[in-house]
Length: 119
Image 1 (spheres, rainbow, N blue to C red):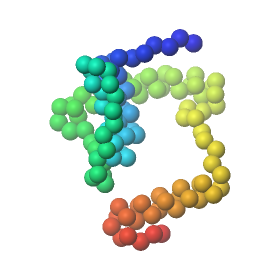
Image 2 (image 1 turned 135 degrees about the vertical axis):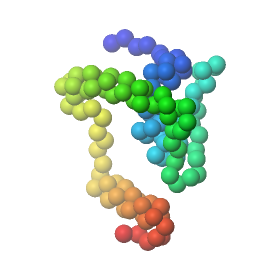
Image 3 (image 1 turned 45 degrees about the vertical axis):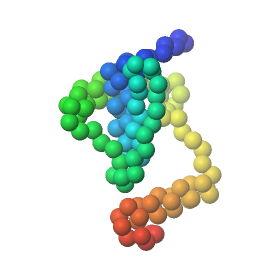
Image 4 (image 1 turned 30 degrees about the horizontal axis):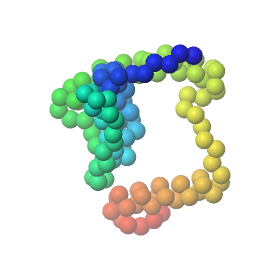
């Protein structure tokens, strides 16, 4: 196995940063960013309940970058699934952890809907 470190510019231009944000960070109210001048990485937190989203010029480039990343996923997924039996590494949860996570999800949904009631 060989490893190669991507530069901040490659992370951005390849669509990896966009898709990590769009698929994971933005729905959680977070936005990962990179500084192409010094290569630093950070994450911003937004207190708006709907989280971040792409707009304007960034949105213009988004479909092409998303397609590029999806094509890479489509190419790599069968190999990973054949070798490991999964695409995304599963985690084992105890019954108590699973019940607590489900209860918290219901509580958060009620808060976001403005009812303040737990289901």
